Image 1: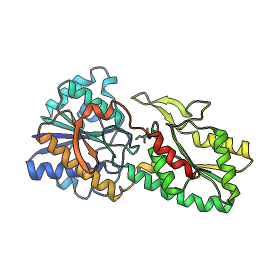
Image 2: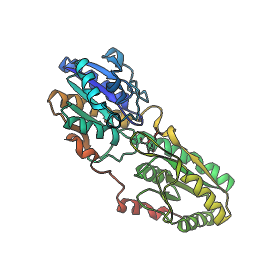
Image 3: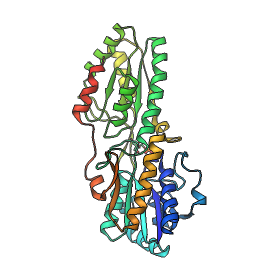
Image 4: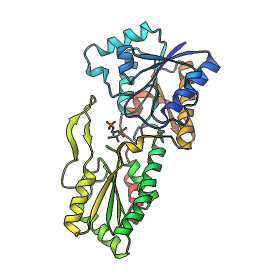
Length: 341
Ligand code: F6P
């Protein structure tokens, strides 16, 4: 069998570990051939590919990013895009496609499967918001990067008696903010699932100063004030119609200064959260996903996605990954509130 592999959407630590595991097991156990498609769905769309074998995938385990490149190309937004993909897959003699991606990439994979393409999905996002899997690789790395930043910000915040705001990724789901805020001892965590009262945030800030500490607020980029709407960068949309976020941290700093008279500054972690080497947890999860994805292809389980449920890697229908987002449960968020202020 000849298998194509692609990585789509925002990159994520652990992508290379998945590719390495797919190829290692596919070659050693099943004798398959591989090609890697470049830059997400752009690869099969434009016929851009590179050969993949054990030699070319050695040494990838700790390497961040993706050797295949990534993009947010949406073939369903391009006239004739789907036919072009089918034509290119046939021309390259591809029997199976493994798509490693998040909501958008797997959404495309689901539709292509319904149109007859033999596809297997591997879930990926630092945001951890994909349904049907307990965790996605990349999330643990992003949380650890954010915690290191928060630990560092605590000491400088205390020296200057400042409020420091840390803006982390999380468009619709506040998993990174919640986990890094809890692990980093934040004075307040703001997530998209729970619109916040700016008055309440200022109360937390004031109360933290009474203990002679400096407040650290962790805010997800998609968090919203109760009165108001999401703060966006410049209103531009990507190929899947998502608006670029970022700005909520700066807005909070200005409001806190205005309302409390205390100096407030923001650090936007941005793409630092997605870069660099994966943690051991993410390397193991990514490797297990890769091993199970190639076995799913071997079994002909087309239209399925590998997922982590408890400690087991299981197969779920591709469509279940994208039918809804996995948001932070209000009860889980409420647990963290005891530490606010
Ligand atoms: O991968 C998802 C994500 O991390 C979102 O939280 C964030 O809004 C987005 O990526 C930003 O990605 P980019 O800047 O690459 O479009």
